Image (cartoon, rainbow over the protein chains, first blue to last red):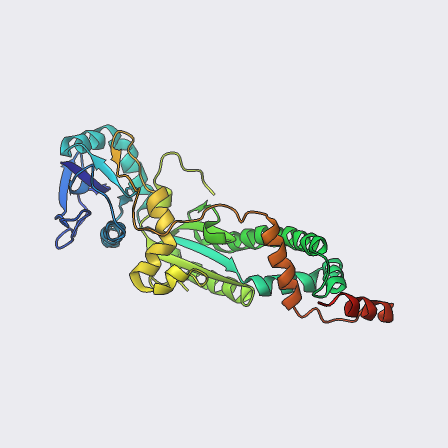
Length: 243
Length: 97
């Protein structure tokens, strides 16, 4: 038996933990451990527990509900301590660091933005913009040897990379002014931009407005969507790189 | 626009929409980010029923290049053919398959 850990917060947080089923087949009740002015939201777990998709959903749902009521430091999915005391010890030892992190995320949400090009529209745009590329495409005009097709495709791929980088930089530049912090992520599922923004509540309307303008600018060639508000997963790890 | 129920257009798995759709689109944050406490155990995710996130850059390959060449095919190249129209038309006729 171990203790599954969802987050740290202040012990003054409203902590609306009633009625949630926690991670694991039993759907255990949530408990609160208080230590040194901090609180940990936990549930009983086994280290041998084989998590399912449902458990990911529960982890996220619990954190989302807690975040709506006050600042929270979300754990990565799957943290299990040997027992409650190990968590208490960690809270005592890390109290200063955790309080600083809570101060940083207080009054903020995470908004994650991903953008994906529509490939056919993107290629058509690139051909319109680049006469040399268009010339080569015209020369083949549906025919051409395997070699020639590969050569053309390679040139298009290079142009695609340039466009991906340019659109990503543009997207981040548009949204960054509304954020206290940004963290850029890997190209999940081929997206050209994957960036998380730490946005103060007061700045959210401005962020939304800029996102709307960005979506209009890229309309047709790319879909840009934002996900959230999310618990600040991207802004709590000690090893994070900014931007 | 920001909404909890937004889904990503190009991901068939996310087309399921709703809470699952949102989870799919932010799953890499829940699995790869957040606070980590080294002394604690991390639950093994082997066998988890989660769609694998492909975080690799699109691999440059012959298949990719051919796909782009086909996309050029489908694009409306429009415009005026270059000088030397008869030669170009001849080449087009000759190479069409």
